Length: 165
Image (cartoon, rainbow, N blue to C red; front, top):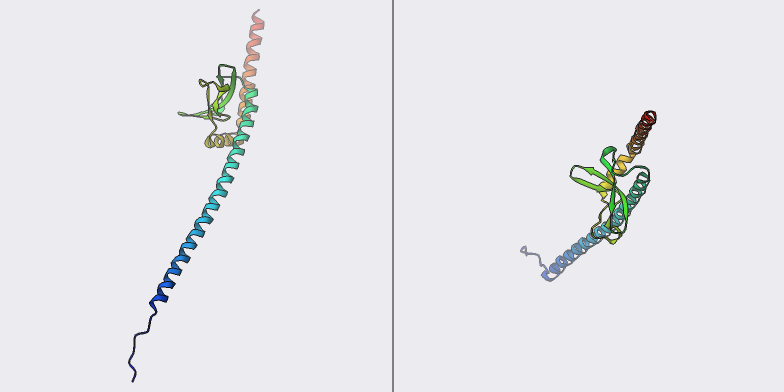
């Protein structure tokens, strides 16, 4: 009669299998990490390109607006054409005022003409997104209406002055 013997376990083989499973798990985790890092790099590059394109488009539209509006006039939606003077000259920038925050729509993030007393804040993603939204929802038409109204007022005042002679 045979007695039930405990199965013979090769502890050496069992330990090797455990180490292999752990190594495979580590490799799998490493591959997941590598894939995640590649995805992060790709997403970061796409985000940088999209943000750069957004800033360039905002700067181009701001330039068109700046050519048409007078300085130091509050435009619709709290935009303003602001003059910055350096030791060499001056330039104009489009700035959005929202509460305590200023968004320099076409800001350079540098000093105008290298003058340390004429710092120009940089564009921000939030400012460019807000500007894009405002453009899409009729800001240009509102600015045109403002300029038309200013022109009518100036014409009427000019007529009054001519009649007063």
